[in-house]
Structure formats: structure tokens, C-alpha cells
Length: 608
Image (cartoon, rainbow, N blue to C red; front, side, top):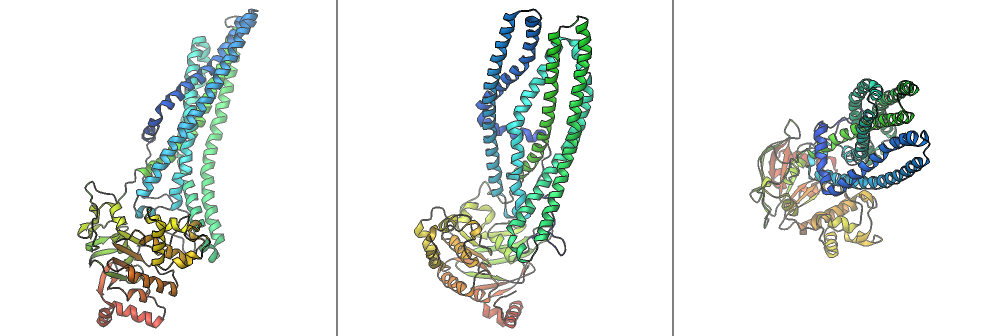
């Protein structure tokens, strides 16, 4: 196996809670993030305009209520005019109906637009994740990527679907209330707004603290998702080694940190929102005292004072709603930082603008002075290798020597830091990736199957394959017999991760999947390590027929697999130590002969 990163852990225990991924870009620019979100609304601009118009109607209906109450009191009740009172009552009913209808359609349209925008965003993030190279996914825990598409998108959902509506309606209401209060009585308005500086100071404090707190909660929920995903995907290993308590401890620690982060937001909100309620009560008391004195002095009508109190309530309610929206805004901004951080992570492996297709592939593989490292140090050092078309080359060496890394470079799962990897003399960086994948079949060590039928999994590498093509590939690798014994044959559901099949059966399906496109180049990365001896013999017999005329790179520990290769390459510390046929290398008495002797002494049938 190669020497790629395998994670970090505590000595003597399971890995600890994951910290924020250092390689993931974090875009902490709220205004820029919002500007980047706006184009997602462009395809739905007509519905957005209609939603805004309906918001204006909802706001107008809400602002009209205290004014109607003032007219009803001053011109109806106080003046003894039943007609005026009836007209105002009818106006109340009409405005209520308009407000209800406008509110319904505004809520429907805003939800429709918001959910379509989030659907588009989620699709784009998923597409981008699929474009990112293998190295990104090896560095980034799966749970963290899942968090971007679930928890983070949901946080943005709160802003887009509910927050935008709250911002427009409450913002317009706040401005409208201030204008109306001044228009009614500017002295009473100044008295009501005397507490505004205290409110502004408290809001600034809340905004500063909440920004940090909500960013921390997004970090912590990603850790929880990562630990959860890792524990569940590795539950067999956890149970096999009796490490359930350790798994619970890790999950408990991650959740404890998440709870602490959430409690920070609760503490900040708990101090701010009751403070706004207190200021609202003080403002109302001030109006009652000052306005009541003027009513007694007959300098102010009762209707105006009642309207003032109504509008004052409408002044503080939007402030509270907007403050609560700030909670949603901060959570969404923290989530957008993560989401756009993913979108701004550039794929390291992309097609050049002048990339070409591989045509009439012969299958000659060349590595010229190739060096590569996952981090600061090279794990492949100045390797030069020439593999003739139609030949099978076996890569052998100790664990960590760099065999799998060489295979990944040949498959262009990574690009070399130095040197060139070429097929038929064409640098892989000049080849369209789709064309390269069509010419290559890869079977990894672990046979991963997707939920669905056996046929679905086999034709995964070639969606246009017919049922006959599927059966032919299964027959070639010796899997058709056991498939025919399954309840529904090739239409048998393998369940999640192929749980219905044995490890050997899953690997045979993976062999068939790699072979169904009829590739010119095949890479087997310890692909027979999970297969029993009898199954392996059937595969080797099939490969003897299949690999004729094809180029194959085989990484294997089993000597029976290695001895069948046309050439054996011994990899030592990221370099090629020696190469040749089995007989030549045995006569040379070098590293390979030593590995062979170790195998004979162990009698285990494997080179390690």
C-alpha cells in the first residue's frame, strides 16, 4: 500500500475529535458571500418581484391598523359618529382580508423561490465536490463534506426562506413607524426615541458577540457530523475490538463542545432580547406619562396617543424580529463561509483548455523522472519507468514503499510534483479526463458497491452496457455462477455497501465493473487481497484471457499473482530498487529474492 495520509489519533485510542480542515478555504466576507448568493435568485426574478410587491402590501396593511384605530376613536367614538365608526370597522375587515391574502401568497412564493435557490446551491456544491481530486477527499473527513450539504445548507435555508421575508417586512415596518410617529407628533416621537442610543449600543454588543459564537457553532457541528460518520462507517471495527465505550466517549466529547458553542449563543441572546423587552416597556411608560400629561392638558387627542402606543409596539417588535434575524443571519453567514469555501477550493486536477482525447490507445505507460509527495516530503522520488503495451507489470515492495501511490499517478488520481506521466507518449495533463477514464479500468483493494442491483453496480463504469454485456463481464471474472444463484440474478439488490454479498463476491463484482467498458489499461491495487484462494485462481484464469493485448499494472502481495507478471518492479522508499522477471530477480539475489525467501520461510503466500 502507499503512504498516503491515514488520519491522526490519540496514542492507544481511537482518533480524537477532528479540528477544522486546514486545507479547506474559509471565506469570511459576509457582504461578498451575500453578493455571491444573489445570482442564484436571478432565474426566478419574476417571482422575486411579485414576492416583494406582496411584502409591501403586508407591511402597508400592518401600518394602517393603528391609524384606523386613531380615526375610530377621535372621529368616531369621541365625536359620536356611528357612520364613521362603521366605515372604519369595514376598513379594518378589508385590510385584514388584504393582509391575509397577501401574506399567504407572499409566504408561498418566498418559500418556493428559497427552496429552488437552495436546491440549485446544493446541486452546485455536490457537483463541485465530485470535481475535486482524490487528495481533497482523503484530507477532508466525509462527515465534514456531508455537513456542508446538510447542516450548512439548512442554516442558509433559514435565511433565504424566512430571513429575507423578515428583513423586508420588518425593515419597512421600522422605517414606516418612525416616519408616521414624526408625522403625528414630532415631540412625542422624540420622547419615544430617547432610548434609541441605548438600544443601538446593546445591538452593537449583540452583533459583535453573536458573530463569533455562531461561527463556532458551525465548526462544532461539522466535527459532530465527522465523528458520527466515522463511527458508523467503522462500526464493525469498533465492535470487533470492543471499542464501543471509546466511540461513545468521542461522540460525547464532540457533542459537549457543540453544546458549549450553542450555550454561548443562548447566553448572548438571553441577555439581549429581554433587554429589548425592558427598553420597550420603558418607552411605553414614557409615552404614557408624557402623552397622558398632554392629553390631560388637551394638547393631544386620545386617539393619537392610542395610535402612538400601537406604533411604538410596532417599533420594538421589528427590532426584536430583526435582532432574532441577526441570529439566523450569523448562522447563515457562518454556513456560507463553509459552503463557498468548498466552491472556492480549486480542483488540482482539471482538463486544460487544449486537452485532447486518447484515440486508438495502445497502452504504453511512461513515467519520466517522477517525484510526488502528499505533504512536504516526497514519497515518490525521481522514478523513471517504461511499460510496454500489452504487458503486465507487478509492483512489489514493503508496506509504505510507494506502490499504490505510483498506481494513483498512473491513473491520474494525482498529478506528479515533478516529471511526466504519459500514455502513448501523451502527458496525462494534456488528456481529457473523461477520455482517460474510458481507456482505463481500476479495481481498488476494497470492493465498494453502491445501493442497487448487481447489474447497476457492474454498469456503473459504462451506463450504456446491456444486460448481455453485464453477464459477459461477470462470466469473464467467474462471478456469473454465484450471481445466477441469487434470488433475482443480476437484478438482485446488493443493499448498502454490498452488505448482502461476501467480501470476495463484492470484489468479483468490482472486477466485472472495471472490465465492462473493455479498457486498454487495467490497474489492480491489491484487488485479490480479500478473495479466497479458490476464487483467486478463477480470477487469475480469467485474467490470463482478459489481459491479452492489454496493459496491466498489478499491486499484489500474493506471490502467485506476482509470478504471472511479465515484469516485476521492486519499489523501495519511493524509488525503483530493481526490475525484471521473477527468474531474473531470483538469480540477481537482491531485494526481491529476500522478499521471496521471507515468504518461503513464513509459508503464508504473501510478500510483505
